[in-house]
Length: 199
Image (tube, rainbow, N blue to C red; front, side, top):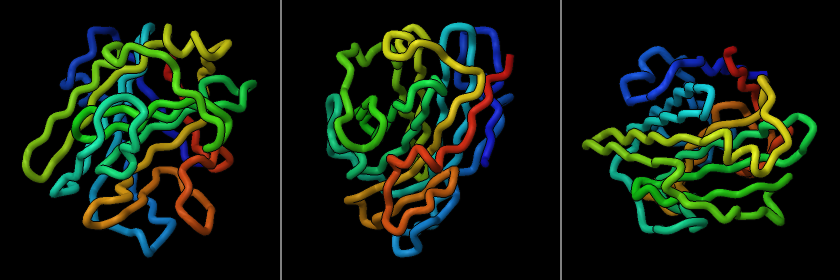
């Protein structure tokens, strides 16, 4: 099982803080028909209050049409973070963000019957930094938000990280932890890797 250690830091967390984080390569091509030559990485930190996510890709040009909460951002250039904070609960979060900062957020045990929580998106502080040839994404996930939906946050969580683009010039699906399905399907918690929160 792939494992990523999320280093603990003291806040506030800035873009520069991620220099000490482990770099995870999102580079697994499970479905050759949907391969793309993009370099994709992720770095994650945590404090006593939140998870902090930084993802980066050299996909270019970027595709971005969807706006607002719970749109089909997977059709755009999209980077995604899925995680299950409580081992005793078979549900997980999906955070999917496009270059416009549009967020698709859901909670559920699989791809069906997912619930979109009623949230103020501002709490996640989504920020895109786009330069020609590079897109960086930053956001945070407050523990207070997680605890509204799960009984606890384990020090070892299951999850996965993805790059996709259903309706981009080069349709692609790239994963961090391999997903052993015949067709692209990111909602496969049985193939999640492990995130370990440094104490």
